[in-house]
Length: 485
Image 1 (tube, helix red, strand yellow):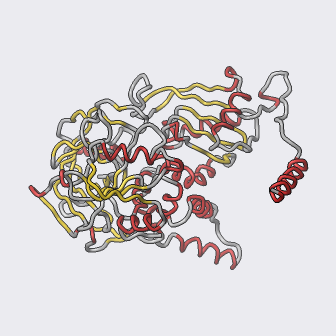
Image 2 (tube, one colour; image 1 turned 45 degrees about the horizontal axis):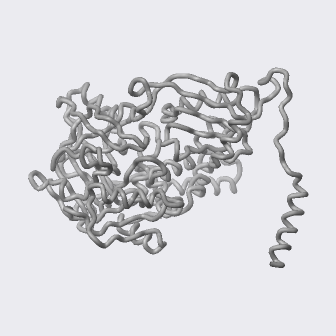
Image 3 (cartoon, one colour; image 1 turned 120 degrees about the horizontal axis):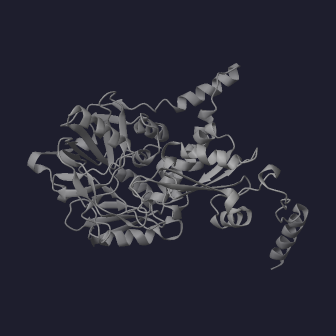
């Protein structure tokens, strides 16, 4: 489903009973965070919040809009599971051998007809155009999320950059600390595509154009967080998911195209010749503050926006938070792609407690001795999985989202000397536990049942399970009891 604006999505949330409107004035400095944190830690992610009056600003603020399975389904127009099934069918597409197969393949191809973005002359994001001295970030309800944050931060910015050699577009999500009314920091970490584009501009000695979008169809925000390979356009993913091409419009002051229906567009540049500045601290998704580090400045040359714009925001911090649902949807959506490389893979989960990269639990159909260890090393070589500190591998019959069941298998099936793998590699730069920034150790835990070749001489006992016929008989008796009472 395609939304024509963030406001249309808000109306849908309201209709579905997924929105709380806050009609009185609330301060974006800390107060909104406390409201939002209580909702995010409520059962099933609580509700989205629309703050209709924000202290000192001119626009309403939406938060926790992506923070539940139901709201993610509303973003996508169908359930995450249905999206994953569609993706799996595309991955399995092969040349047809009959007319009926050709028709089925045609149907699959038509699903992709909206994937490619298309350029248009103008759009709602240009209803108000502000340049030069009219650029003033204080008009926006930018949050200061936690008490020790250095300043206010943009927390849901879609950062558009292009490869200076190929012109390939990238859309990333990098927090932005406000410096003054026309300047922010740009926190693209060393492993991110935006940072690679910046390093190339440093080599070329050329000013780097950057556009930052806020709002629009909520699927844009999801796509900006998706772990796509470098060079794959996030707006193509957005077009596929919304089943409608993303209409792109040229910026006013820089040579970059952005979605025409966004609520806000910040245009500007990063100068590679300018000294870096100290950004942070910032209360991060790790549950701890990340300390100050040097990052480049983003200079804003224009702001364009809708007349009825809504400012989207989020907070990160001690889990569970809204970002868990964005990350979980990505994992489930891209699981078919992982299965192309690892056909033994059954399911995967990034627990909220792991703050994304700290822990991944996977289940496999075990086919040979030490199969789990083969999978661990394979996953550490897959894109952002390189940041994972701990991979736990369990058997196919384990629900990877049930941490109690996973912990039982770890405690029951692991001999530490045999089943724990220690290695080293790249780490999330936000991980304060590593001895140096961006590099640390990793652990793999094989909690599967062990095959004969994996153990010494002792036999492996069967797990305790009740006989199926007895379970069915007791189910019938329980239903009979329930009817009598």
